[in-house]
Length: 287
Image (cartoon, rainbow, N blue to C red):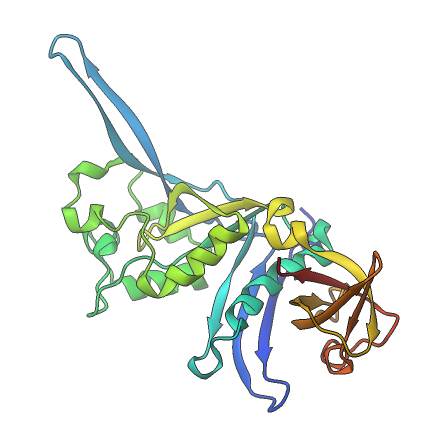
């Protein structure tokens, strides 16, 4: 696979009045290309015995590396003083508007990884009962190695056979596929976009992986390209973004649609995007 097609894009949330950075979000176009991206898939095994007159299903965890070539969205963070008024939604949706600029540079499938459950003392039940016995290290060390190495250590130390969920302690079973309390808002935004939990979880904290087809992501599907004209108008709100990847910018939008493919908005909006009247941009409008 040509590495030019797969890049990493980090976007910074800027308060244009003060120049202060209020958050960030990112897109990684080629997951699993440079290094394996291991996860646990939850499979259901049917258990049956005519002699014992028993029939029941059991879940098991199987190590997989099935997201090769997927595009990953993540690194979504907004600082305390910058939250509210749709800023979090702008930070999240900007990732999809960026992908829409040059779809060929991104995977057909998109995934998001949500942080799993960690208690108030920083303990991770899933890791403590499943990961630690095999890795013999703290969660923080394993997480660091995962981010800074080619993940060969996972293949070396992770159990090679299915792990029956029913054999895990209740505190570990209960957090499989659950996201951290701080990630509930992000999960709702992802579900609104069309992402769905596919019974795949993180191998360290058991957090859920959610997946969507790129072309069916709501922001991408509903966005359209218009010609901007500077003027006084209101009545429609949403987001606007440049159509070029190299100079990509996105901002909140207020204005009015004129005709089929023209949109009137303020000169300040055009300035934030580094555009002028007559330039094209991609917009997503709230309905």
